[in-house]
Image (cartoon, rainbow, N blue to C red; front, top):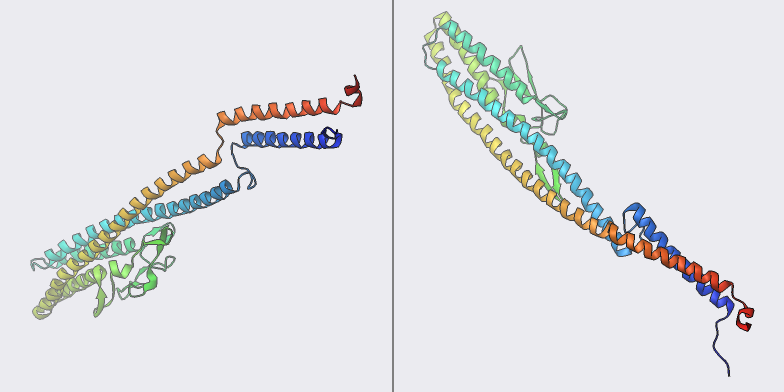
Length: 324
């Protein structure tokens, strides 16, 4: 009758495998404690590793979107301030146009008024040439080219940016995957321009027509030409509707971009919430539970030491141990 027994070689292999398994487990937990992470390589937990990679990718996208939103909100803040300033100067010019049209001003007063209007025009050009983050806000797509220039000889106020009629004037930021917001407008849409007495638009056109018509009235008064004076006042009167329409245009644009700003605020809130949720999820699947990990580390250490002790005892046994 034969009895089952394990050969010395087989017993050695079993003991060695047990030692290696316990050592690997001990080293894994030691590494987790040192790094603070459950998964340090894809072989530790393939499913968790893939989830970690995907979550980090999503968090990276959210960070990019958040930066875009913050940049867009900052630019829109500046744009809103410029709209306020432009509306203020426009309203001031409108008031002066109303005063000039009452027909009671003498030549000295009209000259002083013209000087004020010309200064407002220069200020409006400065506003239209405002830069944000080294880009001209009202240049359309031409953010590096000064949008407006005044020709001191002809008095023309030229717009050099991308015109409103060109759809490529749009600058957009991506605020979510495949979601874009337009954060710019064009100078000619907001401020207009003045090429000559037959080609002008917006507040720039209104200011130049007003200035020119005041000069026409001054010249007519000095020459005693009533017909020319009446023509000058008629042209001057036409600027009242121009100022009114220009103010409406600016207010419309300001309202539109106020809506964009509100949407960006809501998007920022959503991104922050998603970031918190994904960060919490990432912590759950990636970060070590320190209390549990320390307990597991001690157990793994005991198991590893025990396997070494068992192996040491077993390897010292020979046939003589059984013959005693």
